Length: 211
Image 1 (cartoon, rainbow, N blue to C red):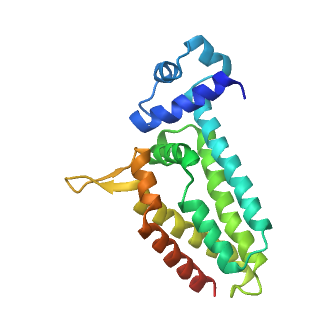
Image 2: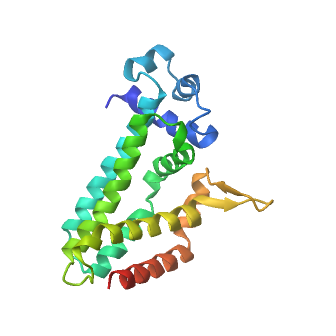
Image 3: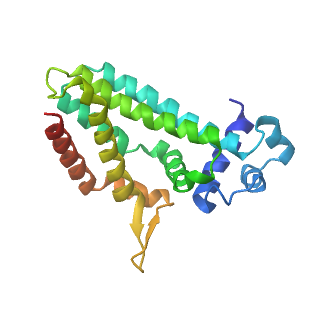
């Protein structure tokens, strides 16, 4: 990927956290990236294409991590723990892209059809990852074949609900809820002791569901 293309993608990630995707213009992106509109259109037809590139980046990283976890020779408990740590304790270098994707999902109805399709693909692959774990440890998991996908969806929703509710949302002085858009705040939440305790609780809960 050429440097200007990378700078455009990076610029949109930054602007999304400042203004939200629906309020972001191509001019906002080019100003942040320090390029002309002509340069923008050399690489992308519109801002939706840039957003799709961000989602594809996250999707590619997720696929790579999923494959690594499934290839490791771990116990069921350690595999679940590793998935939880990967999904919840996002590494510093991926925080911005994670926050950008969470942000755009707040207004999913305003997104283009291709963008929605990519987000659905990501969600389906996360469920498939858990399905693969259940199949891998079939001898230890007390499930009928027909219930594997349903159970995988339940576990995935449990992880997503915790992640969004506990890490990406905060209350302000008026006790109204808002999504976090500051990386330092999210980083501090992820690295606090309570998050480790919550991950352990989620692991034990998921193991009870599976067994």
